[in-house]
Each structure stands twice: as structure tokens, then as C-alpha cells.
Image (cartoon, rainbow over all chains, first blue to last red; front, side, top):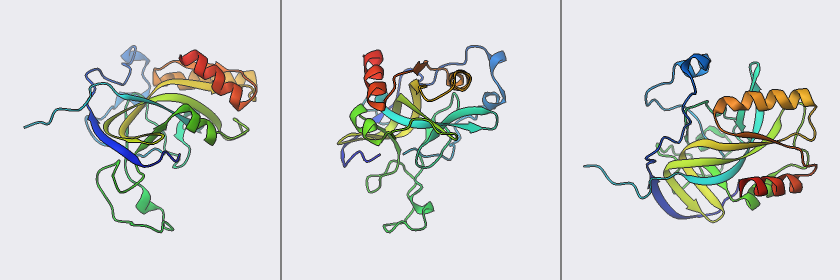
Length: 46
Length: 171
């Protein structure tokens, strides 16, 4: 998406986790069983 | 010494994804770079400009994304901007368009019609289903619920009406 030029830059550190908590560990599939610590996933959005 | 953040609440913006099959399940996929959005883990921005061999500009790598001299970062926009990028057909055999609101945080660039952030996670998802058979629509809704955010089916017949309905629901 073409969203134009940057007008302002700021930092956001959410006080509340922006990721919804898993309802129950037993419901998680293998995709979420190995949630890595703070490792970066290679990804980019556009 | 730590530097205090400017804000403590994520920015909310709109964007579109494809619901693309990953194995046997549908997952959110970025439209341009086909990045699969992780489940219950933030998407982390990384500049891929250097991975496009025909890119005519500066290919120097930068570790930080979004970067001021680039267009990298995870994009979100106003609903009007998102609408202008929607295809006339919101579903094909391979992919179905999903529209949703996304949370951005970390380093965020506020732009003229949206934002570019370093971390992102969906906040709510809307699946236009008018071109889908009932079985496929239900499977997609069920699959996308793994993200742990509300997923709503929208049966409006045209992209404009889909956007109108989403605006009403999200208000």
C-alpha cells in the first residue's frame, strides 16, 4: 500500500500484551507450542 | 539507561491480507510479500528491499525496519486507502481477501495515509464470503480463529458494501 511520506516517528511499548493469550495450553497446536523467547522471525508486511 | 516510550497503546490501522492455505489450514498472508502472519506471536518487520533484484534504488541493508529512508515496515492504513487497493473480486480459487484492523507497535512511522510499524498483530478480522461456498467460508472462519481475535463473515455483495458493513460493525 502506498501510504505516503513519514510525518512523525514514535516509539510504542504496550503496557498490555497486544497478543491475545491462548485460551488453554491444551488447545494449542504445534504452531504455538514452541513460542520462541524474543527471537526475531524473518518477516515483513506491506 | 532506558528511554521512555512515547506511547503505551498500539496504533490501530486497517489492512488487507490473503487467507492462504499453509498446509491444511488457512493463515493470514501479506498481499505483496506473501509473508505468513504467525499465530499468537507478533509479526516482526524486516526490510526486503534488497531481496528484490530489480529494485533500482539503494540496496544497502539496514537492520532497523521501518527505516526513514525506505518504505519497509508492516503497513496499516486508513480504511479509505485500503478500499482503493481491494480487487473487484474478493475471492479466487487460490486466495480470499481478508480485511481487518491491526495493532502496530515498536517503532512506528506515522505517514500521510497510514503507518509503518516494527511489530504487528491483528486486532479483528472480516472475511467477505459472498463469493465462497458455505463450506469454504466456514472452514476459513474456523481456521482464522486460531489468531485469537474476533473473526466475522461479511456477506455484502460488493467491495464497497463490504467496507460499509465493516465500518458499521467496527464503529
